[in-house]
Image 1 (cartoon, rainbow, N blue to C red):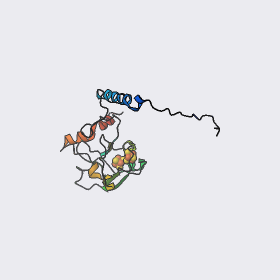
Image 2 (cartoon, rainbow, N blue to C red):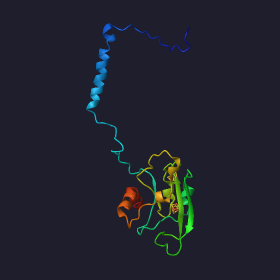
Image 3 (tube, helix red, strand yellow):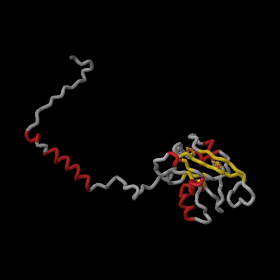
Image 4 (cartoon, rainbow, N blue to C red):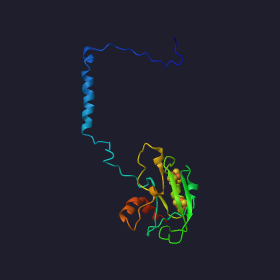
Length: 185
Ligand code: SF4
Ligand code: SF4
């Protein structure tokens, strides 16, 4: 049958010669490629023993920040939740009582604060929207898990360690992103 496009190419399958039928040349070629890779630098990383350095602009798991006295900065204004395009943030506000000034910086605080990490797209808009310097995207990420429920991060998961009682943990959790943000004009 005549082809409409005339692009058909009829292939001729020639019978193999005796030398070709031994596949010796092809085996040698294949082995040469294999050996050439032995001396090349290994491109794979043996995670989790080895970890790649993150980019300075990497945005990972959120942290709820504290001030230098260890008080929670979040005032439960809800701006982060409004800014969040994935509707991943929910919170409940509460009034600070007398004697709780050492716990919460503002008169209103987040009694409950949750982020659904399965919804979060790590866009950083919550961080941008916060007027109280209370939320940062850190340099870690949510570990893998089999249970969907474990990806709802509550306040106890998000709150940064107290800088007064645990300065090392505080500095580690803040990482360099928070410092970079503070240096912004
Ligand atoms: S990083 Fe983006 S998606 Fe994730 S909680 Fe913040 S605003 Fe929402
Ligand atoms: S994290 Fe910031 S923007 Fe979100 S509720 Fe707290 S103070 Fe408001």
